[in-house]
Image 1 (cartoon, rainbow, N blue to C red):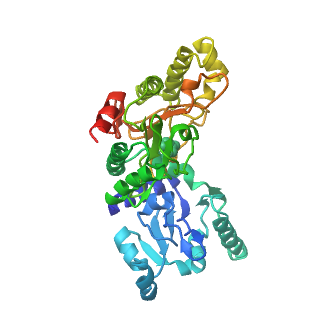
Image 2: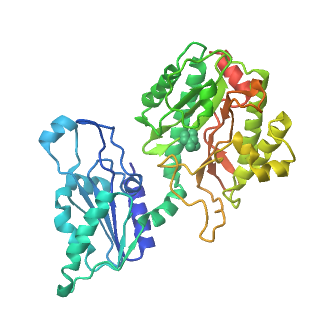
Image 3: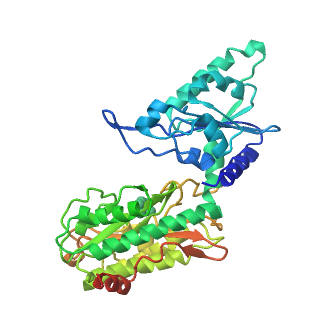
Length: 434
Ligand code: GLY
Ligand code: MN
Ligand code: MN
């Protein structure tokens, strides 16, 4: 944790606000069952501004002539710390994380009025969490009741995510360094899974190899639930059951990424359970690979968000016509959308603290936004062929996705996940050496 990086983010947000106060709570702890909780995950916006990973915390940023940052967090509590572990406490957190002031979270109701009073703008994620909406409503009502003593309530509530999304979209060198590490660990996890896979294993046995590598390298959780999908399961886009047998002759699709210091990696590789592609699997695989190459060639500054997707669709539509899976002209298949029977998702998304990261895909005028250096996105074309009457049987249950993570650079992009075997040759070579 680099305190200067987080301070700079707070300052940048306050500058964008101009004046007013921002109120950003972290996520609540979530009960799994009875008195067991899910592993705690902070709110991404809160963490982006603070680097503080304890639950029950709120940050306030007062912008204007006398800018000020205030953290409310849990008190130190020796009894609780014996059971649950270390807490920074307000004073410790203030010094370690570089806030101007810090108070106990138990004092929030009593102190919040002084920060909200007479501010013309309140920056808050209204609608993100009904508990916080309700609490804020109570505070504003309380302030309004003091109107005759000259206390003004905020005239406008602005969605703070509008400002933060734009900041989060372009990554700093500090963020990119973490994302490269997350990519490296995830690459090694996929390589390990490829080498372990053989007919007769269960999907969860391969999932265990992925999770082992994540945890062993300091990633305490996957960034999303891993998809380990053998054969026809790969045609279920969000398959996470991961408990079927891996059969000789089938493909295995793995979509898995680790989370490191809050940042996600998101890689998909598809490879033969036996280590050797069949001729038809190879044909479809090479079509998806060509889609990805065409898409990656479009990732550079000045290109609009949708151009990688459009490039991938062009390659796909022609390939489906060549396979006899779609009929008609290239333009006809693109226009009718007939390819959607085999490819029903888009070719990527922003990547960062959230796997589907913050940031608009369109500009205010409705046009696709343009790529800029420092943006990070996935490039993940696929082709999923379910059994159907009008599809020749040898194509059935082939589901392929190839997903890499791209950082937009000054004149193109850097594929930070490139080291995971990807061509037919690379995959077969890597698996043969197992
Ligand atoms: N793993 C989620 C995605 O690829 O979008
Ligand atoms: Mn993805
Ligand atoms: Mn993915």
